[in-house]
Structures are given as structure tokens and as C-alpha cells.
Amino acid sequence: MTTPAAAPRSRLTRRRLAALAGAAPLAGLAAWLSGCVGDQAAAPAGVPVSDHFDGTRFLNPGGTAPRGPADFLRWQLTEPREPWPDAFPSPFPPDRPPPRVDGAGLRVGFVGHATFLIQGAGLNILTDPLWSDRASPFTFLGPRRANPPGIAFDDLPRIDAVLVSHGHYDHLDTATLARLWARDRPRIVAPLGQDATIRAADPAIEVTTADWGATVPLGPGVEAVLEQVHHWSARGMFDRNRALWCGFVLRGLGEGVFFAGDTGFDNGDPFRRVAQRHGALGLALLPVGAYEPRWFMRDQHMNPDDAVRGFALLGARQALGYHWGTFRLTNEGAEQPAADLARALAEHGVDPARFLAARPGQVWGPALG
Figure (cartoon, rainbow, N blue to C red):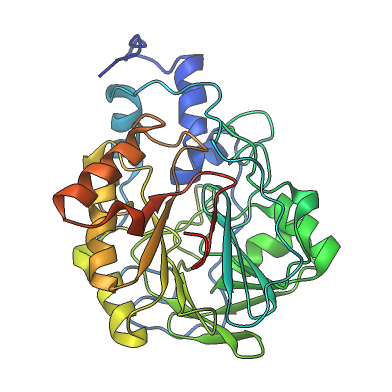
């Protein structure tokens, strides 16, 4: 392991401040550094108290809360990081998707990080769309793309629906949502409370919010079901868990699609619940990156071994791994998730063709592989 030169630990140097701000999608600390309060100052009104909402904040029932500022500083100031290249280009050329995929066909194009274009049943659906250059509250600081989007924004077909899993900056990009809304007026679906962030950026944007277990129709015969996963949400220092997080199951597209958003393994419970509710799905989109150091990330981000075990619990036919190789968020190297995924598949006896580490521009479909 290559260890970068250590900064003095007695004070926060400019380099360390930049590193702290660069991790803002995970901890919201960059917003604190800039004096921001955040976009979700209050919990959503009218939400009843439940096993995952105490009247003020959302939580993971029986799960683990995210780590606090002291642990965050310990991570940033003491843990070595693998180096990342300035550019980590994809081996795939930019995708130019068709206007529609009709009937029972399914075509999935990978844009990068957590953004997929899912086409089927005549609908075009985006997950966690992010076309900005940085995953950050700033345009000048924070995690920057190591590769361009696998589909150029101008090459997108008309988008019918957008699924937003939670409010971290690497998943909820208000600039991209505003562009999509101005161009296509898609149906935007998000978990409870995330509409506050989106509408703060553009009050004209319409957002459908729902709780875990709710079903939202997207088009004839196609619906999105919000699923409980183990994560958290924040945009700034004072709004932690005032909005909900989720994964999505898409029913009516091929044999069904599960998009996990961000999640910890949580003893496998997120995957057992999906399998029990929906049966064996055709495709699972699972995060495989942003997992080191493990003591800090374990409860909120899966590593590749977790993802392979989750895939087995789902019983899905195929998986695509995302959340790696585009933005440097944590300590593992750019190529480590793919290598760790290959190792985990071998250890668990899973055909590597069934679980691909997706790269921007890559296209998957039952007839394409």
C-alpha cells in the first residue's frame, strides 16, 4: 500500500481542509466548513411517528447510526489513502441510447457513479442522475470526475422518470435535476423529505415523495416501490436524517430491477426483504465502492464481498456494480473495487459474468450481456 506524505496532525493544513471538503458527500462537512446550514433544516411536516421516524429524524430500525464528527476527523487525519489517477477513463465509448425500448426488452446504460439509464416498456428512467463535474456543494472544491459521463447529457433521450435514493451530494445533484426538469418535466420520485432540497434549488420542480413500502406508478404497467435500505442522509451540518433514504424496485421492466441506492449490508436484511416481497428479480444494481477504511464505512457502505452476499440473498439473475471509479470518496484505490469484486465472486463461487463492475458507457441487456 502506498501512503501519501503525512500532513502535520497538530493542525488542519490547507491540504487537509481540502481533503475534508472533498468527502462532503459522505459527511456534509464541507457545508460546515463554508458556514452553510444545509437545505433540509426541518423534518417534513405531516409524517407520522413510526419505527423509522421519531417525529424529528429518520433512523435505521435496529440498525447503526452514522459515525459522528470525531470519528470523521480520525479517519481524515490518521488513515492512509491509496493514490488515484487524475483520469481513470472507461474502456467503453460513450453510449448513444435509442429514443425508446418498447415491449418486454430491457436496456441499461451506465453513466457513472450511481447513474443508470434504464429503458424498457417504452419508458426512460434515470437513477440518481449526476452530470455535474463535482459531487460537492461547491463548483470549485470537492470530489471531481475521473471520467466523463458514459452518456452525454445532450444524447439522453426524453426522460420520463427520475429516481432519487437520498440526499448526499453524490446522489442528489440539484443542478442536473434542474436541467432535466427544464428539458423533459420527468416524474421525480424520492423518499420523504428530499423534495425540500430539490425545490430549494428550483421551486418549480415537482417531486413525488413517499415512505418505505410505497408504490409509485411510472407508466402503463410499470411502478417503483421504495425499499428500506441501511443508510442515512444529510446536506449540511444541521439536517442529518431529516429526510429519508431508500432503494427502489422497478416492477414491469423485464423481470424486475432493484436499485439499491446506498446501503450497508446490515446482516443481509435489505436483500432478504426485497427477495421476500418481490421474488427473484432479473437485475440488481448494487454499490461496490466507497468502503475503506472499513471501521468507518462498514455500517453504511458495502464492500464487494458484502455486495456478492447481498446478490446471493436477492436471488437475482444478474448484477451490475456501481459507486466506484468515478469520484474519489474514500480511501481505496480507483481499481480496487473491481479487483475485490473479482476476488469475492471467486470465493463465493459466482460466475463473474453474472456480476459486472460497470464502467461508464457500458450497456447491459438480456441480449447484450
